Image 1 (cartoon, one colour):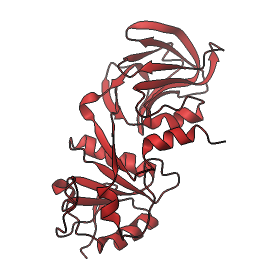
Image 2 (cartoon, rainbow, N blue to C red):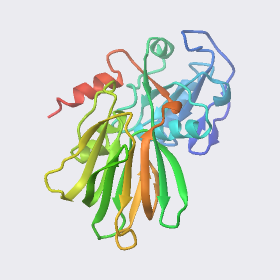
Image 3 (tube, rainbow, N blue to C red):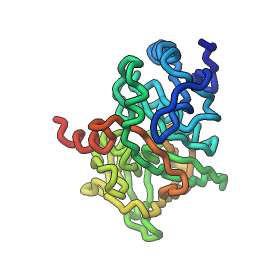
Image 4 (cartoon, rainbow, N blue to C red):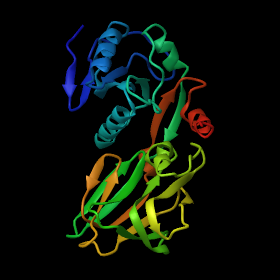
Length: 281
């Protein structure tokens, strides 16, 4: 077995080519592993089960880790402008975006029978108080969060029309169906079916308006946020893990040109999990 190569936060096992399989050429699978002990151990075990190729030669990627590492892997591929279908094996905590980890026997058959799920990230354009523009993508959500003890005050517009002149609270977020079971759910937002073609706009600890608990918007919507009293009440904009502080305004919409494919075992696909999550008590 060749020595794993560390690439950023990703562990890449580069091995000779192996056997063929399904519509995704199983000759050309790459393996990415989280730097945790569990994921490293699993990567060493899987190294002898298949002939993995370098990421730049792959047609799909097997990701070992948890949901956070899957997001890291997808973001790295987005940054590289080459997003491969990703089949995750859960070696983290929740593993909502992952499949159950088993031994290496039958892994190629599982990948060959997997169900593809297409998702599009959000594209966030943020302008800070100095006029600098920042662009980033979010697979789960874009959130606006107060930076200090001062309550954030945010104007909310949808497709150029002001819907809430002033939201006072800890902040607000816009979540995709993929992200609707993450921070959005913790903030008491709705769980969205994967094929619903909607986004969840959810306030975070709102003080005013008291009775507004959020909105469900068509995913073709462009949502804009304008920070009121930004010097006194600074707000940070966060696209998944990427944070920009002291923003003045933020614009968010679906990035349809950056479609991604996640692969799931039959019966455990992401859309099935999203439905099941609504019945958890």
